[in-house]
Length: 234
Image 1 (cartoon, rainbow, N blue to C red):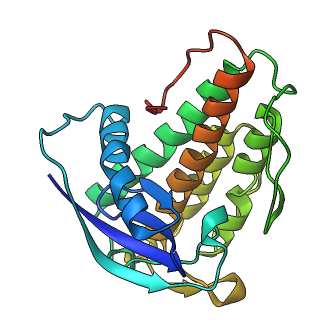
Image 2: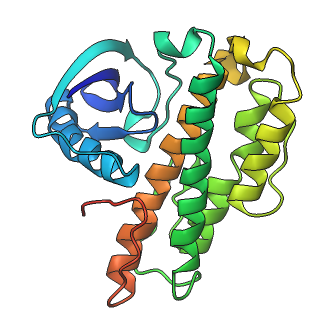
């Protein structure tokens, strides 16, 4: 299996995205570290999607961007060339299924946390403020990008309800537009370029970042914790 990747880097700090597996990513203090991690991320992702895992996985960087953002804290404004092209209905349906599965699995993970207000991990600051520590903080942070992401492609949605409910609200609003499959590239906040393809990839990427953090926190905080819907190998 060949996995094509987009590299977004600030100095040596690298975010690596698997272009053909929307939302799969690794981070590393240099490109070699991020590349080394990608094989296990691909395996985890394929298992999560109930897809067969090939015996060989070849990872190749095919696009890259030098960024001034805080890559080490997952700040990103990347858009792939593939995210600028129109969508077929079949492609859209597949991306929608992944984005909703991601939201549903995030909800499942959160619902299995014994106490959403307890955490043993230390406080840490990033570009957007304090890193969420408890399951409740992680859940609210992850859910509440809903309005922001959808608004970047002119879709009106709020953050009410569960993460699955508010994400579905965005899809319902999106599909009222006759031209949503055109995948129009728009300039959003801070001059960043967005498209429907990018929004759906960003939802899954953001879910995976904080689902992994929640799972790792739960393993450290709650003895015997064993809910792992994303199939992370930690």
